[in-house]
Image (cartoon, rainbow, N blue to C red):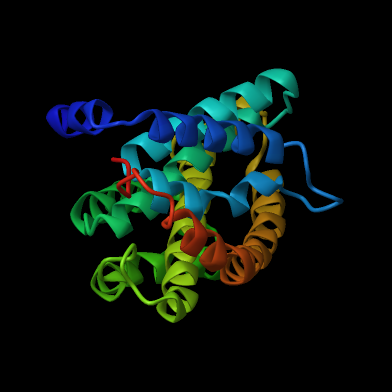
Length: 239
């Protein structure tokens, strides 16, 4: 893995470095926008970050943007997004690179940890159905994607939403893992009853977010990717 990451860095052109900076900055800037929605707009950037930058460079670009944004405007729940958003980007990058095994392993670890926890066994299963659907779609998605940077533009209309769905579900799974198996609910002093209420409301919000991210990716992501891949001198994904 270290050799792969080192090789990715060494082949960076000035344009590639500039592109990483642009995405890290965009991630930070979009954090400040919500227009009344419960989550910031950086979640809509996650699929494109992963597809263009690849899993490892995309993860660190999102992490930098996430840290900078929350350093400027911290919230009570900052520790969730600061990790979950980069992991969502990582998932999208792994799908594009056809590296389904590490992503399946990540899901297995977090889901097993969730169900081993007593709260994970008590909370309704319907609250994580999108996460369970995503883990089933990981392997087929790596086969359907083909070479996304050479695909006909019309194919991007269904490939990118699929990648986006897995990415946002991975984001949600990471938040669930941090909240319950990692024990952050104890940091907030939440009882099971309080956790149950937060989890129910959060699950509904999560399903709406899934729909929004897939919709935005369909309308904006595909045309944006089609334009970016025309830039000369850059080999995608960057890692």
